[in-house]
Amino acid sequence: MAMQLEAPSRGITILSVSELNGRLRSTLDETFPSVWVAGEISSLRSPASGHLYFRLKDAKAQIAAVLFRSNLRRVKFRPRDGMAVLVRGRVSLYDARGDLQIYIEAMEPEGVGSAQLALQQLKEKLAAEGLFAAERKRPLPVWPHTVGIVTALSGAAIHDIVTTLRARMPQIRILVRPVSVQGKQAGGEIAAALSDLQAHGEADVVIVGRGGGSIEDLGAFNEERVVRAIARCTVPIVSAVGHEIDVTLADLVADVRVATPTAAAAVVVPDLRESRAGLVRTFDALVVAVESVVARHRDRVAGVGRRVRDPRERIRAQRLRIDEFGERARRAIEAMVRLSRERSRRGAERLHALSPLAVLQRGYAIARTAGDGTVVRSAGDVAAGQRLDLLFARGRATVRVEDTYD
Image (cartoon, rainbow, N blue to C red; front, top):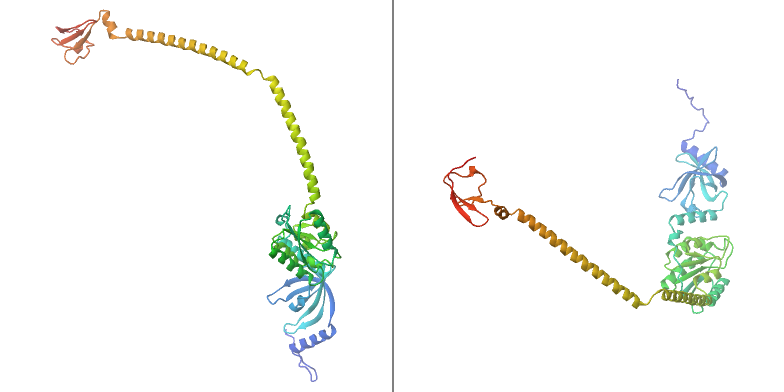
């Protein structure tokens, strides 16, 4: 049964939905103009407008949250689903749908600094692109003619690099592109300097770095534009940021990373004094080795000479062997000739024994029909009165058949 609503008595205010939501929003705006809320990001959406919409939740509750693009620009990291954050904003009501939500003005990752998180996210992004891969690292030239240097002129790094280069290879040509190594402008100057040296085209290898400092001082070497400028450079890059503990993104993308500017100078050029000393040692070792080889061969030749007999004796022995082989061959040929003659004689005798002439000499005759000369083998082959030719061992005769008998 439907419940009946009584008509409101006079004096009671009746609100529309819009009016109710408006009062609620005003109350929320006055009560919660700025609050800090800790929670976990969930159901994150990023439409084409550039704003972020998500749910901020804990184990028991959740609230809708909005981070407009203008405020998102000030956030140093990229929010993701599941990330624990600490936000500051105002709590209000979206009148059109009656949704309670917090409009975020600032955001920090909970438990880690935003700068550190932003650096980690940039590192993951660049690693996914393959900028830190070992296979893209290029070898340093063995004997460079020109070394480019990107660092500050006022620090100790430039002095250490130049002094070490001159000491190891006095004739080396040095191109210095001075830059700021810390501060907001440092990253842009370093990236521009690398592009300038590449455009100049004479540097065989480039050293980029500074003489150490805190992690905050090294910020320029963690900027994305510096990392990409190093990756784009067509000549090998040596990173010498000068900090043992902290590894910058410039260290990871560079072809070679060293701990100090002095070490960078030592790795890009050989020490001529050590090279000369090494050549002398190598030459001495080669001389000793050659002399040893010559001595071994001399001894081997002498041993062979003792074992080898007079060549004339070998020639005489070979002549005797040739004569012996010749005699053996002559006797073998004569034997083969005799054997062939004997075989021919026996074959002729057998053929003669089978010859019709031999049969005729034993008193036999061969009868042939007169005319076509067909040999008569049977009495049935002829008829009475037929003429036959009889062939004897000597001569022949023509006869006439008087009668035939089987």
